[in-house]
Length: 75
Image 1 (cartoon, rainbow, N blue to C red):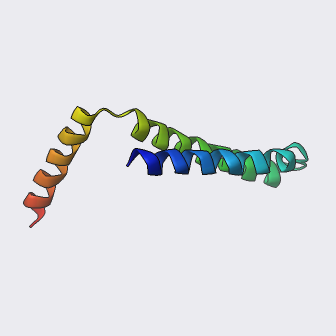
Image 2: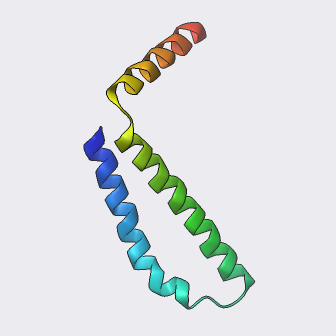
């Protein structure tokens, strides 16, 4: 699981690296809004992957128990 999160984080950083030159040429309100939304989405993706990397094994087990309990209530 951690390897996948690390790969996703590295890929999102690569996409940010590719997008930075285009962000500097922003003119107008629509393009500024687009890049602002893009950066917000990037922060959500990077934050989620960092959280997945930093989550301890005990927290993973606790989260899995909660998921099983919710799944059991649904069925």
